[in-house]
Each structure stands twice: as C-alpha cells, then as structure tokens.
Image (cartoon, rainbow, N blue to C red):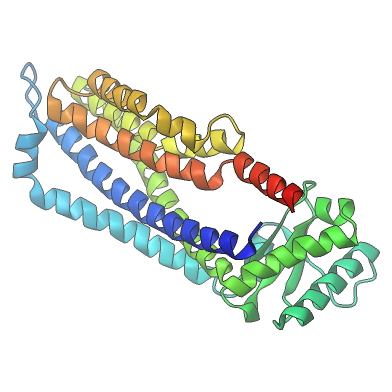
Length: 321
C-alpha cells in the first residue's frame, strides 16, 4: 500500500465531492424552475382545454423563473452562511450539539484519563494544540470525529463504545486518524458542507410547508393536479438520499448503478409520462431531474458506499509485501 497514492486519491475524491454538491445545488435551482413551469402550465389552462405547454409558459414567464432561481439561491446561500457562522465558534460546539460531554483535564475516570493521555501525546507528536475532548455518551458503536475550522479551535470526540471496547493501541490509531483530519483541513470542508446541507434542508422544509398548505387550500381538480406534480418532484429529489443509504448498507454500488443507467433513463421518462400533463415538455421536465439526480446518486455511492474492492486490494498488497 502506497500511502501517498492513497492521499492523492483522497484529495481528488474531495474535489469531486465538492463539485457534486455544487451540481446538486444547481440541479435544485433548475428543478424548482421546472416545477414552476409545470404548475403554471397546469393551473393556467382553462377547464376543458389542453394544458399550456411548457415552451409557451417559458416565454411568458421568464421574469418569474429568474426570480425563482434567485430566491432559491438566496435561501440556500443565506441558510448555509448562517449555519457555517454558527459553527465557527469551534469544534466543541459541534460536539455539544451531538450530545458530547467534555472530558476535563483533571478527570479521575480511568477510561477518560486514558483517552486524554492518548490525545495529548499525539498532539505533542504532531505539533498541534491539544484539542477539546468529548465523549458521545449515547453512542454505543465504535466511532470518532474531529471538528473545527482551524487546529486552534478543534475538538475530537469519540463514542462511548470506542472508549469501552478499544484497547490503548486501537484507541491511539483512531485518534491519530482524527488528527490527520485536523492537519489536512478536512474539518473546515466538512463544516462548509454541513452549511450547504442545512441550506438544502431548509429549502426542503419550505417546500413541505407549501405542499401542506396547497393540500388543504386546493380543492379544485386543477389544483390537485398541481399538488400531485409538486409531490412527484419532491419524491424524485429524494433519489440521492435513497441511493446513499442503499450504498452504505451494501445493497448497491456505483458500478451496478452505472451499468443500469439506461434502465434509470427509461424509468425517468415513464414516471414523467404518468405524472405530468400529456405534452413532451412537461414529461421531460420531470424526467430530466430524475436522470440528473441518478447520476449524482452514482457519485454518492462511489464516495460513501462500502469500499469492498479497495479493502481487498489493500489486503492483497499487504500479503505480497
């Protein structure tokens, strides 16, 4: 195993991950405009007449679409800035928000004393300030994380399971791994991505409230059709999240998803044909985000799925060495 090759690979994956987030935000903006087009086409037609095509709707509502895109970007941007600013006080705040308990320097608990000794000796060896140390009391699994913007305000947290189940050497390896995140600036990227996710989540919550009010306020046939379209678009945008959990469980991987891309394309247009008004533009408006988000899901599975093949290669290399 070549350490520097793995380091370069990790850096490239990080750049692709940031690009994927940017593309996801762009896809959301485009999809919201498409939703506006579909809803305008459904609700703008007279009873008994064919729905207005999206092509005609685009030309007559360019100002509204531009306003929708700007409003979407403002919501995501301002919410992301707010969340990022709220986390700038240091990694300790992130740990406390997740239920972490601070390990004091004069603790008499043996397991916590051992944890503090390990963190202090690795901080001394790596030449960085000793970070705040937290224990996630409610987590029985083995895990840990580092958070913060700079090494000066960093915090390291471990779960109760890691504290109880790992011996000193194993705990040392886990803490050393977290210090690599501190030294390489991974914490800063993670906090910024957390801010972007918060902005997207806020937009989803706003959309949910709109759907709820539309459901109770809309009693006409046309309005119900618009609500169905909004729900359909909302479900389509859950696709990367579904793929994320399936990839983490090992049900699917990015190679399988890429191999079956043509079936996803077919499924997207079938869903568009079933749920949208009977014109090509409306059907494409729903199918296109489905296909784009499927591609995003492939990247999600690649970065966050189980790395079975990498582990097998590493084991083979260690055996040959």
